[in-house]
Image (tube, one colour):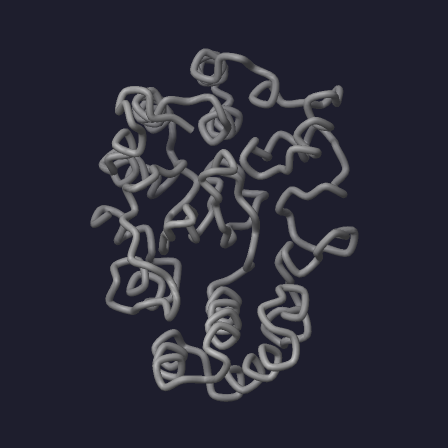
Length: 279
């Protein structure tokens, strides 16, 4: 995980402190990052034994997509759900859950809030929401930090008013829009709609993701190759070689650091048979 340090620079210092365990999340177990393996679009902040990851989600070759924060559910085939649009939203959500679990604002929660950059007014607001409604993502939209740009989880069951760009069941299916969507970002229902759409990207329909990746790379379709690399159908060992090939054709600043960091992680150890570990 040490090679990820430079990749946290766009985020507040507390993000790196959480990832490297110098700032402890109030309620999560200290699960090793290499316990499950993770996809290249994810920069993990913490893992749980559920098993899941919470982290920063960035599409390097799709500048039209805003980086965001997600939960990734390993048993749900690495499905990703947007939970926060920025780091402050993520910290406030963590506090909402922690206060709901504890039933009050403990001294440990107060200390975490200070270290995470949450001010006393924000902590009081979160405590009020936790007392009234518990850990309900939908109520976060009432906070000043959420109202201008709420994450997808604030729109439970009806995302028509969602202003962001994370894929959701109510999204219009267009060729330009789907060109920057990977399979891990969509529900099973939306995935079926996409696969039966005339605008379905090939990484949604292929039975051989590595072969498709090679064809996209040959056509210099780097965005498509990246989306293929972050879609289901890879062994981790194959994906490591593929992302190095993508790096050789890329001129995006900093992408080489992501490649070094991601390929250094022992993702293959996430499976019972290492060479078969896959996503």
